[in-house]
Each structure stands twice: as structure tokens, then as C-alpha cells.
Image (cartoon, rainbow, N blue to C red; front, top):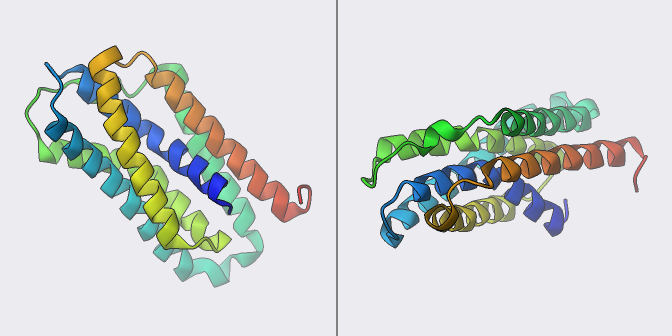
Length: 190
């Protein structure tokens, strides 16, 4: 996996966290960077931890499924991308917007976990692809941190006007990446 592909994957995985962060920013009375940093740390931390956990899980089963790993990677990415597109088209995900300006660590942990489940599946696919996990985890965590921080700022400024478009774009990127990986392993792309 190239660094460009890794960065695209990180950005796609970060779209849910970006959207929820924008919701949090929308409901704030004013700019509070301390609150924004806490949100970004939660989302970035969970988004970094989940692919690492998935990678360890995938390494346990790697020898059993080496012959079909590209199909599994494609299926995982296509499913996750399809779900993101479906949710965007149905307008789902706005329930995370209801909040006040108090930091609720339990709520943030649940939201961070919910938005990073897809990163667990990507971590499994990283194990099958032989991706170096530490640079990948750092890239995903940092990208999510920065996009979440930006999401809070966008929420302060514009609200969640672009939430559905961002989720749709993230889903499309995951599907296209899954297709590219599948076609490379099948010899259709070089």
C-alpha cells in the first residue's frame, strides 16, 4: 500500500469522526479549543487503536486464509463503504449532534468507538496486505485528529451542511480502494 493510498484510507475512515465532530461544534455556544482538542484526541486515539487491534487479529488468521485474503479485504472495504454511502443517502448519523457544551467523556468514548469500528476491519485487511502497521496507525490517528479538530471548527462556522457529502465521499473511497486491491491481486491492474 502506497502512502497516498494510506492517506486516502485514513481520510475515508475519518469522515464519520469529522461529521460527529462537526455536530459537536454546531451545538457549542462559541469557540472552545480545549473542548475541540478533547474531541479530536478521543476520535484520533480510537481511530488509531482500532486498526492496530484489527491487525493483531488478522495476523492470527493470516496463514489460514492467504489464498482468499484479497477477496476478504475487498468484501470488508466494499461493505464498509457501502454502509457509509447508504447512511449518507438515508441521512443517518445526526443523532450524535444532540449535546451541550459540557464534556461528557462516556458519550465521547461511545461515539469514538462507534465511528472507529470500520477501522478495526481495515486493520484486519492491513494484516493480510502486509502493511507496516505503525506508520499506518500513526497516519490514521493523526489524520482523524486533524479532521476532527477541523470538524469542530466547521461545526462552529457552518453546522453539519456537508456531513452527508463527506460520509458519501468516504464510503466511495473505501469501495474504490477495495476494488483496486482486488484487481491488483487478480492481475487485472498492475
